Length: 283
Image (tube, rainbow, N blue to C red; front, top):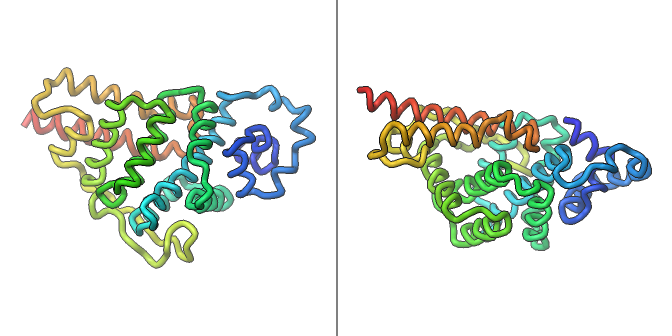
């Protein structure tokens, strides 16, 4: 959690500046003023875009603020969207302090004055266009848009803005959208309401049930291959997806350690899909 400690200490948030720094300021307030003096002489002053801690901070900040913006895109925040945001927060197993920060960023993203383009522009710069990180980011946002099974026109408009700003090729975006629909079907019935109201609510009682495994059709969809594909093509797709979502690789490129569990869950789903297809073909 070194990156978050530096945000709270002030130096890292001050160093980032821009719309992302402003969002951080709204979360930790006056604490950003602490450490500005030490920032001038700190070794952090040599860090620039692409530095791991900067990237981790930018990823965390952009992810939850844009999740909030996406949830409010159609004029209301649905229970499913709240549940998805809460599930993301819960799977990350955050400390109370960083969980509160995630919720605060989510709520800031719902604001009328949220600077989506500014946040995305800065996020892309901080990531140095690292394709695996940008793809992980848009995957999370696509899943938010499809939290209730169907993306509203306003949500799809925002997704296209994200795609354009981050430079995600259309064919990759379409594949990720298809994957999100398959994952929604795969987890259908897995999100339920408890006593709370999700981020910002009183109880935050949402829970995620364990899916029983993908159907054969969903397994092909998860790997992005057709049932007519040969085993060599299926294996290539499987290995490519595993490589793209490998937790250690993503963390080394700047994914916050707390989000490692999200990547681990994705690799688990990919393996399940591959094993389901292989078992069906052998049977």
